[in-house]
Image (cartoon, rainbow, N blue to C red):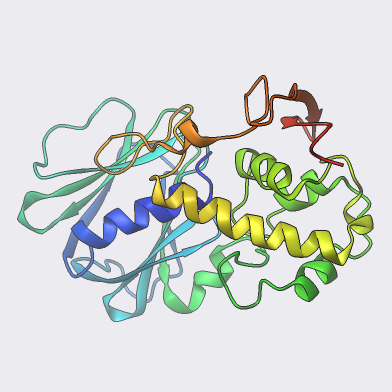
Length: 267
């Protein structure tokens, strides 16, 4: 599933090809992919894309007349930009048709991804409860400590909880905990303030590096030009046999996901 860096990389690319342009219509080829939520009018299109934002792993496109698109790529979703609006592609579940015959293909093999059309006042209603944004001023040691208060779950599981921090997933939490030197099995409510500060610092550093590299492409993720990101070449423990210091990396199951960590570097 695309995590925060992949979603932000897509948004950075969309800023160049979508912002300020008119969306003529959205075509749906798979039932349930495009959802309309409480719009004040039957057809919000054509409508100009005024701004593109992110909340957690969600892409939010602000439209004219106080409407919006919320795009969630889920497991295998991709947005691919093309200058020619031809026949539907394999696994194309929907498409956003722009002016001048340009198009954003919504490709999704497993069909879990969604495009929600809603009014801007209903955006929060259309999103699940989401926690702290890693690049916001609210992402402080005090705020994170409060979010983890009473959480007996392992710190790895807590950091992947979207109600605690919005946008983190398995790959980046493994990398963050390695760089912070924290064992993924340690209970969240036992993490010291010193280590919380480390988690915040490393979260910002890892995510910034990943965005700079266009995200991590291990399975399905692609940028809007259908090219992979490159941060997979800079991972330090995820799917590795040895950490950068030469210690053997161990693998364990947590919450149904594989955790990679170094038992020597992470205490």
